[in-house]
Amino acid sequence: MVGTGGRVATFAVWDYVVFAGIILVAAGIGLFQAIRGRKETSSEEFLLGGRQMTAVPVAMSLTASFMSGITVIGTPAEAYRFGSAFWLFGFAYAIMSAITAEIFVPLFYRLGITSAYEYLEMRFSRPIRVIGTSMYIVQTVTKMGFKLINIFTGLNLWGVLIATGAVCIIYCTLGGLKAVIWTDVLQMVVMLAGFVAVIARGAVLQGGLTKIWEDAGEGGRLEAFDFDPNPLKRHTFWSIVVGGSIMWVSIYSINQSQVQRYISCKTLGHAKMSLYVNMVGLWVTVSLAVFSGLTMYSIYKNCDPLSNGDVGTPDQLLPYLVMDILADYPGIPGLFVAAAYSGTLSTVSSSINALVAVTVEDFILPACKNLTEKQLSWINMGLSVVFGALCIGMAGVASLMGSVLQAALSIFGMISGPLLGLYLLGMFFRTPNSIGGLVGMIIGLVLTLWVGIGGQIYPPTAENTNPLPLTTAGCNNTIGQNYATVTPWTSLVTLTPKPDYRPPIADSWYALSYVYFSLLGALTTMVSGMIVSMITGGVYITEKCSTGFQMGADNPAFKEDDMMSKDVEKITKL
Image (cartoon, rainbow, N blue to C red):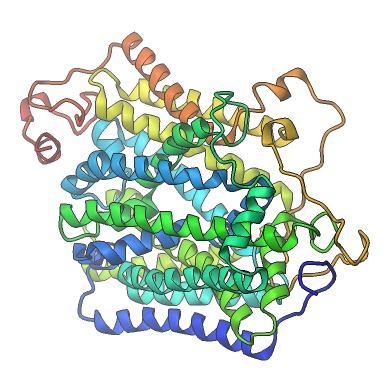
């Protein structure tokens, strides 16, 4: 009986057929784009789609890359355990979209850059650009491996990894950014269909959407608006709207995977519109994901699979639900696997394309300026294969590291805040120089790593995370009897063991909500960078450089007697 605990069904033949079919279609799109654009072999065509993309497909690609496989299965589990506060991120998405579209898109688009980190050299210096790019590469390669391994380890491990790497390599190598974007459009549709299938079946079983909503209300899952200003509480209105907005600005405004999409648009208007359409896509996606979690609560309100031992981690809750309520419908569980897998494919493929772009623009072209378009084309395709192989290799490493890698990735994710602070420092203030920018970014990074590592070693208490009550009173089986493997989604992530001793700082500084990390890093970088710049003499900016988007005089490319050089001219036109 559904919702009473116990083992659930596993994949049937039709599930594998549906799953494989959707993945083959994704690969087919890449091949189609390769054949369609076989006469267009320029580097700009490969990396930016010839800067001829339109708003809607780019917007769907932006949304799809946001919805990684971890997000597909993680957000419903979040709503199931902690309630619908995650819905408040809709406010953060709106603020992020406006800031990115009106401030960062005009800057990057009019400069005509390919790598987001080119601006760091224009404004500060070559070493800062190299550091920024290197931080992005290390973060992204590591994250790609983890996102692959965390979802699909119930199937043959290396079979899944090789198949995934092969599909991504095929359409990234042959089709470039156009293939990535149009494949993301398909994957976005599949992901939303997966959520709709769960909600529709749940509504039938529970007697309608109204019943699901009533159960969620009775279980305290609809109390989203917590206006407590305490920065230690994991999710409150203020932490999500203020801290969450800065966190998502740092992801969308300066992350190469996102920047590369909107600068591929054919006009500035399309680039801006892609972010606003993406905002609507994020609203729809997070709403369906959260309501899937509320549906899960309605079904399992009297028998929590996690407490009952039916699953081992929260990541397995939604896969368990899918096999529990949809196993009687051949192919539907396969659709949901494809939905989660599509999120992973989208994230990995966009990351591969972005890694190729920054490697070529920030390392290869500055060192080898006389490369022909044909040589660049081969380099682009070769790097796609290399980064695809690295993705597979990192996933293999992730399979051996488990929760250690999860902690490491949380730390890697903290670099976006200090990087955002560095961009804002250069864009809105005249004084900062390269010394101040570098020192400020280092201080911001050290501070966020300190609080982040501390939070991993000493996880926040229930008082700050506020998990909502669950029960096993309605379960037919006792705890420990049903520790089932939920094929094919078993996660390798294990819970971080709690230390025996908690120092006082663990319940204060280390307990800072994770959504404030980016804000902390950005503010620290800006304040310390400004102070160090003033101490070291600042930077001379002439009146010809408009406030906010200047080039630093300590940059070797900056020449007082050649103020209208190409780079300066591009910036002053803003």
